[in-house]
Length: 117
View: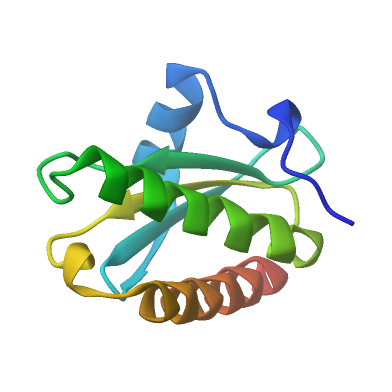
């Protein structure tokens, strides 16, 4: 069973800025996913859920829980990359199943991007 421990999180601001500068981008479903290769040896997840797009704290927390769980279930297919998930306007109009489906599409795209490289 895959876990989502401390090692799977991106914590340092330098890591985020590197992903924003050099990352490959994929978008859709109210989310944008940026990815860049890392030297850690396993995938790491960073979240950037803007208050501007998701006003209420309980909605932001719900969205983050969904993203973390989806990442946890798909991390075995991902290579050693850093991933940042950004919220987009309109993400609050989507329900949990729509967000989950969008994330599944994003993970497939990310896997395809990094297998070619």
